[in-house]
Length: 490
Image (cartoon, rainbow, N blue to C red; front, side, top):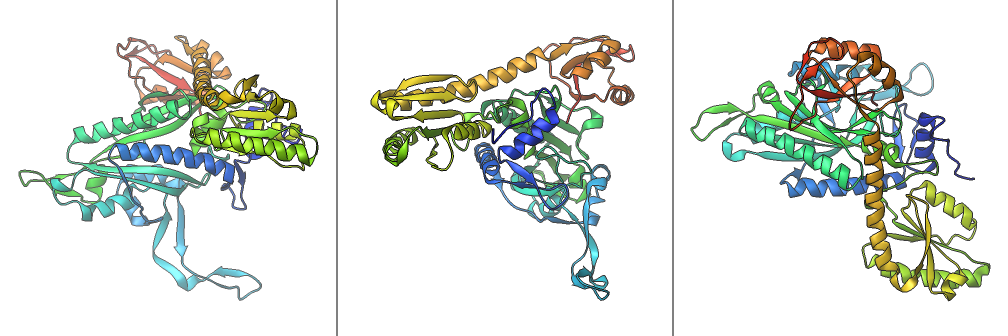
């Protein structure tokens, strides 16, 4: 088969890498650790972008853009922040090249050293809060609800397409508020925006809750996250929202006059998701045939493949398909007719399965004579014959059914791979097979680090149980307020 894919059960990592490239989502570039997002992959990212952007604007946010380069001195103003990102920063030291006096090529011009070195943006809190200092004078200037769609650079040593790359695309929201309560409410609102998007659009069930102190974003007072379970049993952090307190306002001296005319420091949040969501989409749903795309994210929702002999039949079938395409597009369904005459229909079937197109129509002379369409759904690979006069309504309902089925399958997988464990010996044994583990923890960083060191499992989040059940820490035997979620993670 032209698009053969590594078996997922034999080598999950190779299966993932194989699928990302063979489905034409992305490829490695000439720059180590950086990727080329190919048109089909970027079309999926655009659908994510557009849906999220709409949700942001519904909640009152506006888009802006801030510089790619950040003065190095800015990072040092917030101690935790610089410590968290220092090892990942790419730094610009010179602004000009010159012809190599000792041979061919070019070298850095030593006379062109920058007065202050610039960091290529790993995240934008510092450069944005430097701007906010000029924007905010009074309580009347608040809140500021800004979002930025951008690229960032974090110098990664071990990379994997979409999941961890040196450069990646993301959005980062940065908001400023008059009170802590407003900022905390914003932090919660945005993680809920993300989790709704994950469930409703990505068809991906997620846990939502705060991180432990050691896992928080550098410089945050609190971090809320959403965690998803991939099909190999590893967790993936799919989005975060941070309550930054007044740390960045104090670092950049951003104060406002309240209603009484008293100066106060502004309260802040930041929140973001990235092209890591593309990796989550692949790993949460796909199979050995290729991608399985939720219809809401599929660039092509229906592909039509003509079955024919000779140019005359091909012409007649394609004309028929064009009529069906008009009817489907009138329902808001995206359609492609694969009329290529240089590859066989079996090759086309395989190619569109690899690319995860939710619905495939196959139409030949007999189908035209019978006024019917053979319909194959990608999520189950089931085929059925549908009367052509009902095809538009049927397809619309089928796409909705596929979206729900993909979510239910992922939810069932998570539920069947979520375990309550009280014994540390049992935990050490079972963590090898992956999954989410609900375990008691004594709340100390020391215990958290010991478990991570011994098992490579981390506390993914602290669930916000309505009625948390106290118990005994599986590691230390000390009292525990509630169970937390442990897992190995990407």
